[in-house]
Length: 146
Image (cartoon, rainbow, N blue to C red; front, top):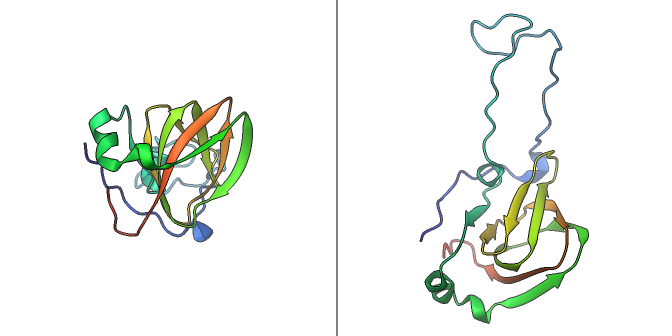
């Protein structure tokens, strides 16, 4: 299975996910829309906005191909951690789940045991763990798309 490529988001220091105010009486910027009308809002998945790549229910063959059994192990319990990635990191979740709230966002991504997640360099988020959690991780070089 190959991870799908996604659009790269701008540097997070200059990227804001602030929501527009509703009911301000201003035009919503859509041609033909008048004051007071609400346009349907289509939000892109956060994984796409932040260039986080995800594979769900990864096969044993894929794990062997990546050498996941030789990666470092990290464990935690119930907690919240602010985190920033200085390099690309590939993570295989072995136990538990994590909610990832990107800096400046009100939305979150949720990853669970069996997921393979690639976090991009310079990504910043708060991580919420609701119980026991264990992952295997590997730091990746730029351009290494495995």
